[in-house]
Image (cartoon, rainbow, N blue to C red; front, side):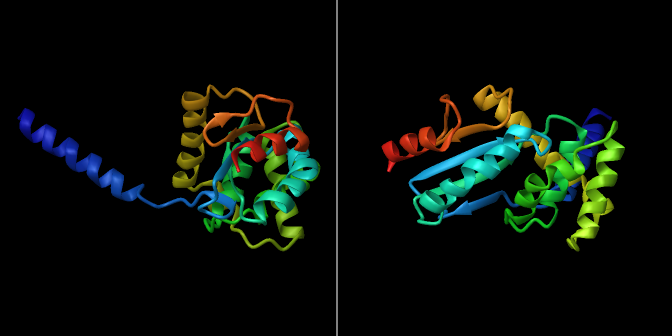
Length: 193
């Protein structure tokens, strides 16, 4: 009897793995073989993360990413349910492109408002519709594979880097511990090139 239960357990486990085997593509920009890899852990409801995208990222992109010297990976570290849902939207097309992620950060003040996660969801859904962004909001929000991917990214960040705040920058697997501005990032990157 124990043998039958064990086999049944293995079959169920194997079946479950096949269902959740959907590959989720990491959102990134730059040369995949770049000598320097930056990982940025972000929450889509974090004002400091939006500031990073507005004030630091453009110079980083121009000087290091577009020139092929740096690859940047955008990883999810949702701080609340509204951020988790927005991360699902950013990840939903599963094309590895960052356009939707940048859009959500640049329009953060339009959708991160209200008293509840439902308010934020409603605002986000309206923003996407008003801007004619082609995503199936309800399907994206209920995608369990994408949700697991996002939450596992968060768990990995805590375990590997003792992450507890956003944005957090990792450069070649080392936590960037200086004040986050372009000047400091540039100095750290130039030492590795």
